Length: 574
Ligand SMILES: *[C@@H]1O[C@H](CO)[C@@H](O)[C@H](O)[C@H]1NC(C)=O
Ligand SMILES: *[C@@H]1O[C@H](CO)[C@@H](O)[C@H](O)[C@H]1NC(C)=O
Ligand SMILES: *[C@@H]1O[C@H](CO)[C@@H](O)[C@H](O)[C@H]1NC(C)=O
Ligand SMILES: *[C@@H]1O[C@H](CO)[C@@H](O)[C@H](O)[C@H]1NC(C)=O
Ligand SMILES: *[C@@H]1O[C@H](CO)[C@@H](O)[C@H](O)[C@H]1NC(C)=O
Ligand SMILES: *[C@@H]1O[C@H](CO)[C@@H](O)[C@H](O)[C@H]1NC(C)=O
Ligand SMILES: *[C@@H]1O[C@H](CO)[C@@H](O)[C@H](O)[C@H]1NC(C)=O
Ligand SMILES: [Cu+2]
Image (tube, rainbow, N blue to C red; front, side, top):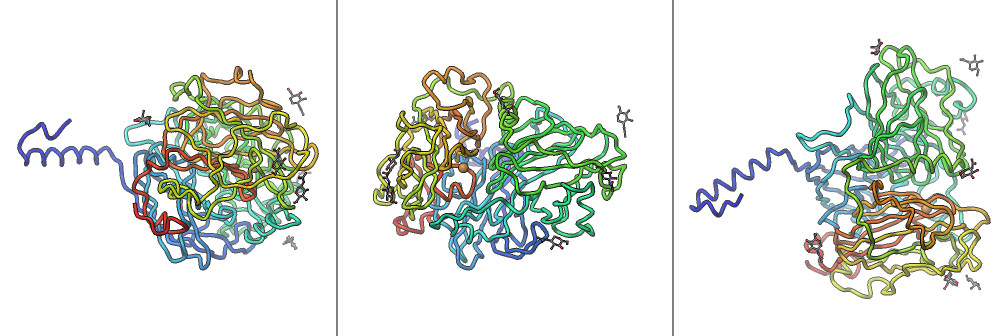
């Protein structure tokens, strides 16, 4: 409808009011939040430590919105001596690249005492979360849930009666500052395995220990029930369907979740609907989210364990436990059975079988049939003057002091390395062996991606520094979803694209590479900005495991000046 064609000025005015009322009645809202980030005392696993909190809460407050809403977060930094930013994980930031919340990439870190306004649209329903993206602040506890419901009048393609939200994380007793120093020291000091796994910020150190040896672990913790670290019991009624929203913001751990006696039907992955499939247990890597449906169709005169364990690394961390408690049974009544044992940590076949069962729901967007550019990224562990690093095509990422978004927009060529990192690696490199020459280079160069092109990324895993070791890395892309076209063993070679699934590959924002294997992704570069693509394991990113995709950043307009108030862009005006 065009108001101008209505003639008289008053009528045009009336017409505009009517149209905007119609727009408002469609339900899209602006949701305002005022947040203060600070360090505070907490006891995530019943032992007191310093955690990062928002408005005095750990984890941070859950944001709940509807598709089409605009979220406005006024984030005030109440840390005394450190900057801060928050990344909205899984939100594509279409047209708002400066709100992506990545320090040195989309914005300057917010200084102590300052406030930054994040304003962005949540255009698509799904299970998301937010977290710190400066240094290793995510490991320090800066995270929370972001749930986007269907817009009014729209329905999910599945039914459920009620839902639970499970935000999973891992927790160390050593401070993040100490962890960072260890990772950047020579000799290198690894952070080790987490002391506890947390469900919604709650874990039980030296108490779920008992789970392995006794049948009544939680009772040995002697919870009165009101402790902040006491497990949150999932209280259910019989014969109902529950949606569990499960997201992982772990710093390191790959996880597996199982619910005693109950199957789960996977229906959502990273904010996209998938073809429903039933599982006994579910793998989830850092950066991923899932929704599963659970039917309470078991004996209601009993409670059931919900158990979460570590995958992919020799686990030294106890399972996280809570209960599925039927209304006919007191929540205090513990099962007499052992909690479900998660699959063996190195049973990669089990993980691959799960990952390969994920397909897009019929009717989901399909990938373009061909690509314009293929970038093959070799993941290696290396050394640089004795320091241990992760490198991609022999470049270990270091972030510049001036954020890329501003420096590219204003053509400040001395703000970062102008040398473009390579699109491929030397084909003679043997991915099955440690590098013959362990030395790597370091850089802040970017991959310049032409707008509206289709890009294939082949993530190639390889041997780490130690012989016969290759680790799992969950790679997360900012600003886009990608189609996961396929997985393979060994080195990706010409012809392997024949195995790609172009019919119903899942759309996701995070995908894993298995040891000594490759993973193929395809995305359309349709969002001008500067976007990080990196391993979501916090210490790995800290050690350089990431790349930067710059997409027509010189065209981006209206960058808020607070996002530019550092480094070489400090004096620039839009
Ligand atoms: C674990 O808990 C027991 C009993 O409360 C206590 O005696 C022991 O010192 C604790 N161990 C650690 C490592 O905290
Ligand atoms: C714990 O389980 C063992 C068998 O695994 C059983 O013999 C014992 O009676 C159980 N204890 C309790 C307190 O339920
Ligand atoms: C659940 O449904 C089944 C089958 O419809 C019925 O036999 C059973 O009594 C129901 N249980 C409860 C607790 O309502
Ligand atoms: C995993 O699967 C591969 C290929 O199917 C098979 O060769 C191998 O034996 C399996 N490994 C284990 C530990 O089951
Ligand atoms: C690797 O770098 C170290 C300096 O850290 C140097 O001593 C050594 O010769 C280099 N090795 C090769 C093969 O270039
Ligand atoms: C990586 O870069 C280092 C330093 O320039 C060099 O010594 C090494 O041979 C390179 N490795 C590969 C696999 O290209
Ligand atoms: C990119 O695609 C969009 C949508 O199809 C179109 O509006 C825009 O003009 C294109 N931009 C370029 C540079 O091709
Ligand atoms: Cu990694």
